[in-house]
Length: 203
Image 1 (cartoon, helix red, strand yellow):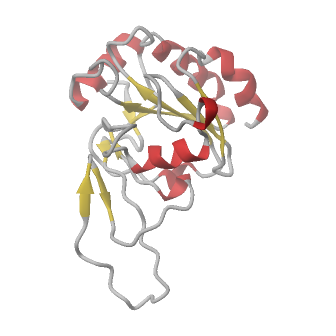
Image 2: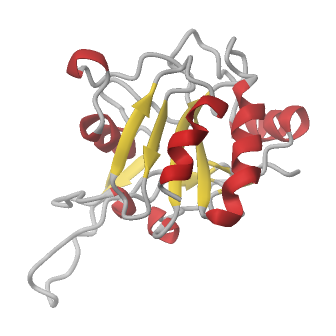
């Protein structure tokens, strides 16, 4: 298997960190779990590095591990007309990874039921079909009541056409610079190759 998760392990629920002014005050034991992500009561997200999604193998992976990297976050699907973009994403990743680029793939089944498999099936597909080596994460929702916390943050930071926040389809892309700032959202039809010129500027 070449398809990797965020740390070499598997997908996880995103966990929001708890901030408190009282270092001696114990963190609440109760954790509310929604849509594959755990959130601590009273927690507050401040930047992309505060999120902790699960990898494709089920292990928590803090995005803090990617500080100082240029990130391209993509919601992916295995049975979509745009699925061949996996090849472009892998090519772009291999071309620029030594300069600090990391592609993060998040499977999603919200668009035409085009990601019906579980994480094991998704991992096998992207490994065998496209030889994917960039980090892959757990299946998530990117719209609606159960939107993954990371995607709530990304959509607010980089709205789409006319200020709409909803992700319109598979293979929507978010480019994040080395300081954790969300630079731009790219629509499905914008291929990985077509946005390399923007990636190069912030490596």
